[in-house]
Every structure is written in structure tokens, then in C-alpha cells.
Image (cartoon, one colour):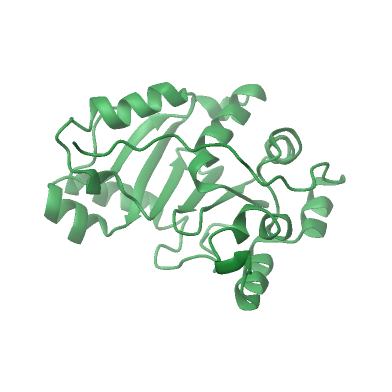
Amino acid sequence: MNGNFFTLDEFNDAKRKIEPVFCVERRLPDQVFKRSYQFHLLCEFNFAMDDLQQALEKTRSPLADETVLSCALDPDPITFYDKEFHKIYGFYFKANFSLAEYLHMLWVEVCPGDEPSEFLFTEVEVYLPESASWAMWGERSRDIAAIGLDDPALAAFLVNETGYCMDADTALGSFAKLPFAGQKVPEDFRRALTANYGSRDDLEKKLGRKVRHAGRSSNRRPPPRRTST
């Protein structure tokens, strides 16, 4: 991790890496990946990167050694972050970080104690490693992160071992329904999310095996976000 948020020039360089992979103007339940991935998995926004990092470590994946680009797309990097704070919520870090290291980097090394809390709020974040062999899109208000990846072993581990990454069908019966009033998902949202990110049957066909978990509604508590004093 480099311990620095992006300048405007650094963001423009990062944008050239982001745009071939993501449809940056879209929002869920639309298909947000421009690059074609073999697998699409959904998980809870607040835990997605930590779950993925642990999976990379436990599977001893060479992908754990990659440098990862993280960047907020909403609020707007230029009209909000650069205009208000003269820096942009985007940075690079190593995929083999620990959660403690990540939080220290985010809140202590690069976010001084008098930093306004508004800078820490993000609605849409993307994560992209050097190889682009996986990519992740997260939306806070939906509490959904969408992961695109090509490695069948990593996909199987995320689904069967962690239990928190799942197909759209299962997610809709679990955490994806929670932000909606009465936990009732609108039918057009349900149809679009399943069409774009796959049903349970679709995932099982791609994995060549039955999915063991039945979908777990998580009671995990998200890492705290510091507020200004």
C-alpha cells in the first residue's frame, strides 16, 4: 500500500485502467462489468474485500501478491473529492493486506484526525488488481458488492467455504433484500439482478457441483468508520 490518496493526475491514470473493466455510469441491478468474467458473485458491501483477501490467502493464490487499485466513483471524484478536498478517494494497496493494516492505512496514515468525515463516505467503490483477473464493484446503499472473476477454484472457495459469496438468487433471499422496505424486493430489481449476475442453477453449472450453502444472512458487524470529532 502506498499510503496516499490520488491527486487529479493519478486519478486520470487510474481511470484509464477502470473504464475498460467497468461500466462506470451504471448502477445495480444493471450489469456493471464491461469486461467479461466467467463467474459473478454477490456479497455484502462492508465485508467484500476482507472476505476476498482471506480467500486469496487461504487458497494460496498467486493473485494475493498483486497490487490492487481502489477508487470511489460516487461521489464524483472530480466535482466532489477534488473540488472539496483537493485529493481523490483512490489509492493502491497489496492484496495480501490484513484488515488491521488496511484500516490503519485508511484512517491513520492517509486520513489525519481533522479530516472531515464526508471524505470517508463513499457510495460506489471499485477494486481492480493489476491482472484484472478479478474485479469488484460495491454499492453502499444497496449493501451489495459484485465480484467478477475467472478462477474456478477461487470462485468455489468463496461460495462453499466462506458462505458469504453467492449467486443472485440466493443473495436476493439473504442480504440483498435488507435495504428494501419490508425486505420486499421489487420484481424488476429481482429480475434484472438475476439476469445480469446469474441464478443458483447457472452458478452450479459453471462450478460443476452443487452449492453447499443455502445462503446465510450475516449478523457480522461491519468495521467501524471513524467520524470527525
